[in-house]
Length: 401
Image (cartoon, rainbow, N blue to C red; front, side, top):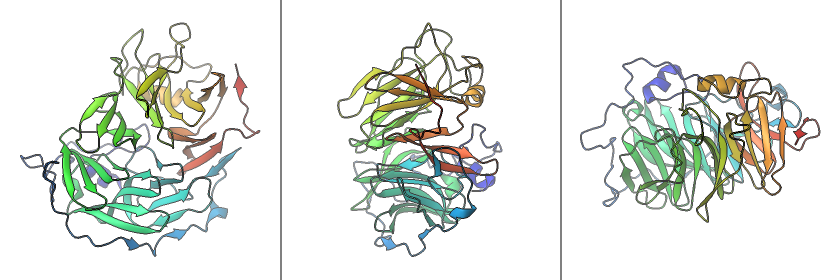
């Protein structure tokens, strides 16, 4: 999507440098005094009759990519998870145990976990998220018109649940998909459409910026940039609760693909307070078990070996995150400095607590961990791709404690 469109939507790119938008950006325009973002939006208690967008339609334009021989080599144990460049208005890819999805300015792409077949649908798209076999996203077929759509990746069908005449009136910040609803967030709050009835509801006026998270257990689990905490938002009521408020910045986490765990980087503890864009100090990794509702601290580096951390992910038996290189500073005056220095990937076995690290590792940023396969972003110097790295590959030089 072009820079002008990103700015009109009030969005930033996935890189650590935000898109520079004019001060006159209309990211929050078009919201009336009632808080509605336009269209058939009502309070959750009085759901609107669903507009007739028709039935799910087949995707004759979903194609298997055939250009693998022209794609770059991303290194030992690494393959391209999606055979299309990623350049989007979102933070991270969508994933479940079975599918991954992402977008660029031309299309939404999806593939089965572990498969070399990439399917593409030629819609200008943003904010792809996955639940099971379903991909939610915002499509822009005829800019600035747009729609909230859901793809059934297995059956190759597509259903529209909400449409809007002008994307610039909304300030979108994400989509989510559950077994019951497709949800989306704008400058006016949180909205949902029932997947069966298609009825649309305005759940909450709270602005959400869930750059990492997932849906599970009837809720959105959100590493919420707007609160600086990890939050649970009920999909029926929109009620927001903090999962484990330690009184400090919580940031840059991920859910496990099976939706049983969520991890994050937590800055509670000694020293100067950390902020999202500013100072980043010593941090630890925390893990929340979603079925039981319990939280535990995973690392105990502070205060003796305290170090900044970023971009945590969790799978079945491992947690991974990024740290500064061995010779780098341990804390940073600006978050961007940490991102630049964090070229060490660290893994911890949740069963044994053994920790290993891999230096000069340049795959990361909003990752997911599927078993011991890390899905994250890699740049070949020209384009950014979603890649799959087998962390057990013998070509990777792990150093273990």
